[in-house]
Image (cartoon, rainbow, N blue to C red):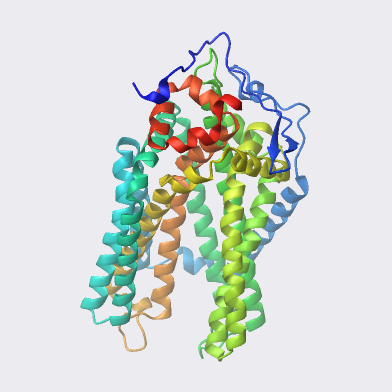
Length: 502
């Protein structure tokens, strides 16, 4: 028996452990910050288990902002594509086959990965790392064999980085495998999580198509004319930034609604899976709360992140424009802005994900939940295992693999079939702007669909961590074997949690 199983209390269904925590300490000043939440109660109904006294529409002005942005986005799509939508809808046979191949590649690779994820989680983590090495290596060989020296060197360098990174993180795989197995077990016991994944994939595919329409319409309306000059540079830049922002904002809201829905399922499991009654409608009830009372809070956090992402992307484009114009000062300035925005994006995204779990389970407003999530993780010392957990990294790498496969399929199709619409002025398909745009759209579609489809696992991991930080004694009491296995791999965390003194 593991030493971490010594003196574990037995679970008594008639007397669940007292795991409520009305406040937590912040920083060295030991300032108390009230979470104003009550412990979940055994019930068949999610709303009764995670009851919210006097529920209110939190952060509702940001829900209004989202509604306005959504209307403007749809209006832009309709306005810019009114003259070309028929041409888009009636694509030629080559374009139809290309779209079908990209869609099939994205869906098959995504759900093939989910099958492996469910059956062999350790294999999935290793495959998520090694497949990217194989893909980058294949791209390097293909580029070099076609006399594309610089592209081949770039892909070779990328493959080398993947190899070095994998050698560095192999030691973290045992912990991540254990946590992934726990998350998958919960998903298998709650099939609604995979239904949520399927719904999210469908929604992301529809939105991806709408975004393609928006980008295509913007390019046709204000982009390059027959002479290679912009029809209206001011409108093209302005609408390009608008599409970038609105697309990011809407995508973030959709993803975070999905995250909050899954958080309800995993929160119910964490607290009540061993109780006499556990919510049977956790998925639907959490979704209902996410799109009603908590929708404004989801929009609030999504808006902050979208603004930062847009700033980072615009700075990146402006940096390249400055380089082309020979403006060294401008290049350095935009490069600094891009770095700062990228760092802020990582921090805000991390905080948002943990805050949304509290928003979903307890109906908190965004600022309240974000401050509480940060304080919980900081106080309980879970930053180390979060950083060392490869679950989310493996999911991200696999999404990159799906994106690369979609890009490769689209490129192979174009260079193999040599469609007329993709040829240059010499009648040859090369790396012209049209081909690059097709590949970029294919890559973006693959990454987005894979990210949404596998996000249920990511959301489950996030919710598990935040619940472990808030009420670790619940996991120790109700899942002693899993607790022992996880913390036998990472013993320092048990000391940081200070379970006896919580």
